[in-house]
Image 1 (cartoon, rainbow, N blue to C red):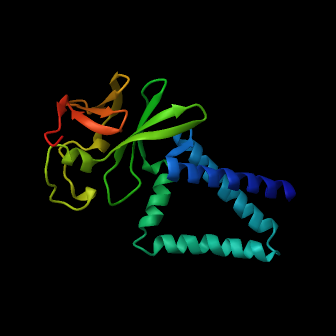
Image 2: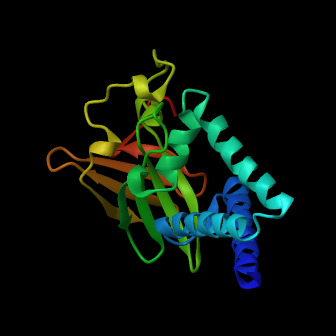
Length: 210
């Protein structure tokens, strides 16, 4: 029983540190599934602790907190629940591609209110940091002064980020990185400034608003 409890404590500390690092600095464990595995291991040990220590009042309170959190995530149109399930399973991952020794790119979608987006990850050994994020709204606004929709999901682009079949590294310099969204037909090349993490070119063309 003590061993299970100690494992639960260690996993709880690791999960808390992982969440704080991501939300404050967008740093997480290396690899998409590392965070997912950590969470499900924590949940499994949490249930084991509840069962093993059921006679303790704290075990009952802990179970109540988990059930309450689940109910509260479902009440507001289940939006937090969908976000949780998409981010804590493979359902939200469309593409995960190694670009180079220093970078990987992903197409992920964790919201029913937005199209999947592109994320560029800088690898740092056992950790990784999200350095670039590009959404459909950013692509739509690149050469427009005004967008007539309020939500990302209302956009109807000809080629969505999520429709890309592959992600390819076209070119990397000290200050820029160019990534090809490969569709099998007309492809889309996005160039980002690595210093400020901004989109600066689409298919070699700069924004008219810059």
